[in-house]
Amino acid sequence: MYLNNKRKAAYLYAAFFLLVSVVVGISVGTVSVPILSVLKILISYIGLDSVLTNVDTMHINIVQNIRLPRVLLAGLVGASLSIAGAAFQGLLRNPLADPYTLGVSSGASLGAVITLFFHLQIPFLGSFTLPLMSVLFSFMTILFVIFFARKLDPSMRVETIILTGIIISSFLSAFISLMIALTENELRQIIGWLLGSVSMRGWSYIQMILPFFLIGSMILLLQGRELNAFAFGEERAQHLGVSVRRRKLIILLAGSMITGAAVAVSGTIGFVGLVIPHFVRIMIGPDHKHLLAISVLTGSGFLILADLLARTIISPTELPIGVITALIGAPVFAYLLLKRRKRS
Image (tube, rainbow, N blue to C red):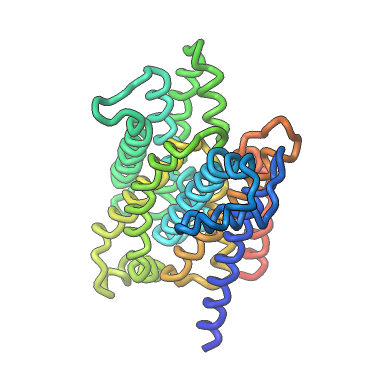
């Protein structure tokens, strides 16, 4: 009974945190929009246009065309990285596992940089070329990590997979650095993208990430029981009726798809998939049926606030959002690890 109440409270806190983050993220900026006006504009999206009668037209334009798409994009990226990180940590039973340590983000970044460098555009896909290339390269990366880890260690121990991911991540980062060294006109665009940002992206970028996020997150949310079984080890999971190889592949591919789409629209943003699931696990425990969903809400709100900090801390200049998440995430994660070590 206590656990149920604790989880219900965690859902309420996470949902409230996300709601506050959205409203504050839209309200605060170079031009402040009153919170009441923000709420009225958001309510108007459910068909109640009459609430906009007393709202300043300039505020409506700022919210609808600039702030709202930016906040939604930051929320989707934060949710994507958090649920992918939670799934990878549960699958590999290691708090250090996330899209970056497994090399998935580096693969997605390479796909995006190649698209930008060569101005690639697949016929009939248009702007969807960028996320599709990122997702494709993230798939290829995780499959190569699995293949190489299996060659090194047929039992595919967690340490082997993570070490393989770090090696491949370093190798792919060298390719990215090579392209940066060779580029001229696109240098500023590529470097700015690699540092991570959701600035001036607009509604088209939300359309890019949304299908991948919905499909990938739905697949992962349905794997809660299997991820709980993996916590006892792969052999025990097999005895509990889990098809270990199949489920492992599904989780890795779904997490890679979400990560690839997130990296395509925002660049590389670190520590979200590492810290948020760890923090949520401390709050509610290791049950992945709830951990994944609460990580989505918490990660979304966190990245919205990180983006708000990135664009206001030295206004009018904007910092890359990846800098903010690293400055916050690294010490928080170090603290969480020390706390975990003392407890154990």
